[in-house]
Structure formats: structure tokens, C-alpha cells
Image 1 (tube, rainbow, N blue to C red):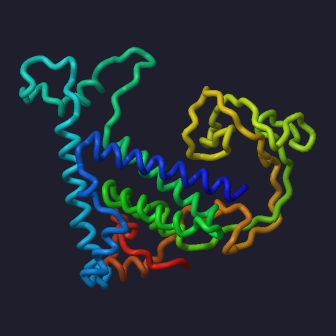
Image 2 (image 1 turned 90 degrees about the vertical axis):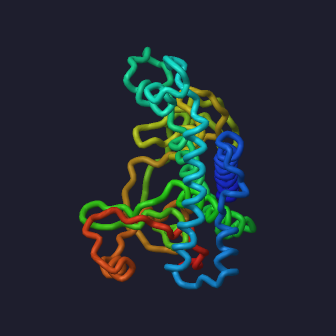
Image 3 (image 1 turned 120 degrees about the horizontal axis):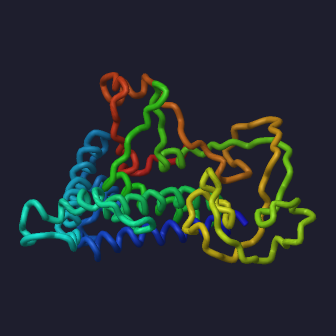
Length: 311
């Protein structure tokens, strides 16, 4: 079952990654030959003998900044002008750059889809692809697909970090490591000893006595709960839309949990029971930055660097 979930997550991540790349190339006109990748930059770093972190960082920022600037320029040029424009297309007042601001000021009828920012759409797809790529590796860690999932996660993370950028999170007077790729390389998780009741995801009755069979698919109307979990697949990030009907297998949903103990392990029984953020020490930040950041935003480029192995 874990292998099946891992393959599904890997396929979904690859699909989203492919959609992002096709959109960048076919819709926004940036040739994939001019789009860096983790594999190509890693090879170039080794070819140039860039062994220090600062030398690698400067090289990576340079090549990715070029791609990011060109993609942003292409999107700006190719954005469709407003159908309500008055005057010649070259008018400064009614140029396509005023289009998003104009539409935000309009009172659109209820239910009318609002325009979206192409850059935001690309970023959302890429970050979702990264989340599913990390899920896939956690499921496939001990399988023959582990290296494929590992390299794919690096490629997606480089696209996310290179084009859209990442910051180290700052909250509660503390800096937190929330990099999905970095945390994936720390092979630690939580294993809990607990008792609970198991209810059916389809009827919310005791799964051992309800009428649904675990090896049979049933039609399910999709809905996401307050936390964003899908009732059909049980995931937080999924392609399903509320209200649509899909076929799904029933699955156990835990409730009335009573925790007895929690252990730190390298292979948790639930492959997704991994850390979502880790506190960063002040000494490490001072050493890496050369000064106290004092709550300022810190850009993170770790996902662009060559892989340093697993912990």
C-alpha cells in the first residue's frame, strides 16, 4: 500500500512539474534550453571546480536570476490586454500592466472567476509538485524507485527555489528551517504509541462493522474538512475539487486518540510522520551570515546546491 501511495505521489508530482515546464516554454516563451536544472547546474559546478559554498551560491544565483528575469519579462509582454481598454494599445493609461488593477476595482457578479496572476499560478503548481515529490520519496525510501524519487525532488526544488525563491521562516523570535528538500534529507520521524477508534472514511461508522469493503471502490462526493484534508484520498494537497464525484476505496480514519508514548525513529510506520520545521540555532546563523539577522528575512538557496547526502 505504501509503494502504491508513493507511486501515485510521484506521478502527481511529475505531472505538475511537467505542466510548469510546458507552461514556461510553450505559453511564456522561455526555451527549456535556457531554464537551468539541478542536474545541469550540479554538473557545471563540478566541471568548474566550485567547491566552496559561497562560490556555488554566486554561480547559482547568477544563472537562475537570468532565467527568472527573462520569464518575468516574457509574461509581462504576453499578458492579454484588457477587453475594456479605451484608446490605442500603446496608451500608458490603458496598457496591459493596468489590467489587474482595473479588474480588482470592478464589482464583478457573484461567482465570476477573477483573473489570476500567471506567476502565482506557476509558483503554486511548482510548490505543490515539491510537496508531493517529498511525500513520494518518504513512501519509496526503501524501494527500487528511491533514487528516481530523490533526483526528482532535487529537480523540482531547484525550480521552486531558483524561480520563486524561499525564505527561512521567522516566528516566535526564532528562525525555523522549513525547506522541504532539506528536511527530506534528515531521515528522522516520529513514531507514536497510541490507541484509537477506526472509522470508515465513507460512512464514519466503525470500519470493522460497516458495510463498505476495503478492497472495493465506491462513488464519493469530494469535500475537504477545515484542515484541508480530502475525504476521498485523505491528503492535504490533492487534485480533487469539492463537489466532484470520484471512485475511492474506503480507508480507516482515526478518532478519539489517546497517546501513550512518542519515539524518535529513522523509519516511522507512517512514512509521512516527518518533521515539518526545525529550529535553527543562533550560532549556526551567525557563522553562516557573519552577523545577527535580528528578525530580518533570510533568503535560502540550499535547494539549488549539489546534494550533500542524507543525515
